[in-house]
Image 1 (spheres, rainbow, N blue to C red):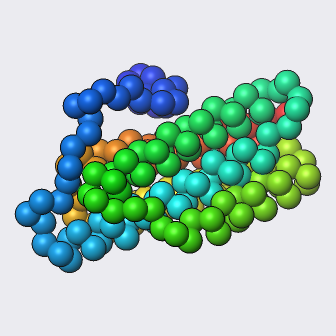
Image 2 (cartoon, rainbow, N blue to C red):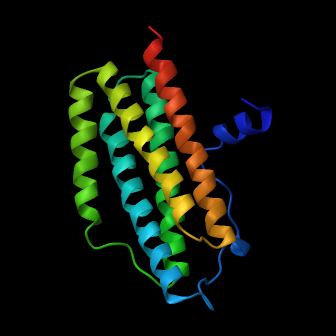
Amino acid sequence: MERGKEKEQNIIRSEMDMNNFSFRGDGMSLERRRKIKKGLRTLHTLELMAQNIYKFQITREITDLNQYLITAMCNEMSHYQDFQVKLYEYGWKPSIFRWMFWIVGFCFGFFSKILGRKMTLRTGIWVETLAVKHYGELLNDIDWDDDTRAVVERNWDNEKGHVSRWKSLLLSP
């Protein structure tokens, strides 16, 4: 991995200031706005599920795995916030059905934890691999504005890093 990419992967939450916020969508076609809205809502709800998976996989033990789960949860929380901010910048609200993704995240997280370390890691690999695929499809299918595309791409890179981390931990004793 390149040195810059490696450093980027270690950043859990990006710094933001007032210049990072602006209203969006003015002058865009209705069709383009509709696709962006659908994409942002999809990413927002999936990140809610991801943070809950990690939240409910964390045990009381002081282990490297728990430290990685906590940092992954925090990273997914920042993704969730990124997409919520973008929704509001466009004048939209999150999906009212996002609670279902909260429940799915709880189930995957809680039951994989009960089944042990290997299942916790396999669940992480499976979910993050699906996320990487989904992000890629949304990046290809939607004509994002430049700032939103940059956020989606940055978060996509984070998801790739999670897959690598979980795979390497699964291979270690």
